[in-house]
Image 1 (cartoon, rainbow, N blue to C red):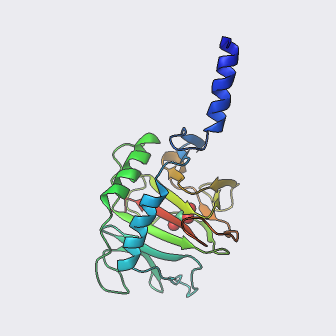
Image 2: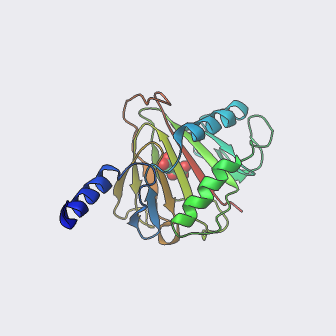
Length: 224
Ligand SMILES: O=C(O)CCC(=O)C(=O)O
């Protein structure tokens, strides 16, 4: 094989393996980095099932009283909640009055390492919001602004059915880009992208081999 043929073979192999475990981080925008197929989905899913056995998924209400189509739970020292009193982080599950389940060290390590790979070393999340989407559920364009220090990145893991993530700008009406997110993908939003508006388009009907008729997203944040 000539050198040229060798390098062609190597590059077609790189394409072949592009979206397989260990594939390279992909910059979407400054500070917005996608790590395709970055986690062991079965391992993360097992942790989600354990969390939900203690703090079940529930449909929270918006401050305006609307039921959210996405079901949510939390793990970590603080959990994100929404109700008539507003959006906030709190140490206890309002449904049970008990602390949220502890953040599994394996998940905290995934979030820390993904942030470091994306250029944000030293990330130590204290809150993990777990979202469960069924086909048809969606998340409206919003900004994550309930945290104390926006210098920390946000790391999210996707499992199950595919989604279209919408990444906007720091202003609500700015242009948006659509980013497909698949099972085992990790997305990091930090630096210039930390305050970008973002959301999730309605999930298409489907059945995932491991999770069934749902998508799970875990969002790791430093709230304090
Ligand atoms: O589900 C996702 O990919 C995004 C979740 C999100 O933006 C949020 O929970 O604030």
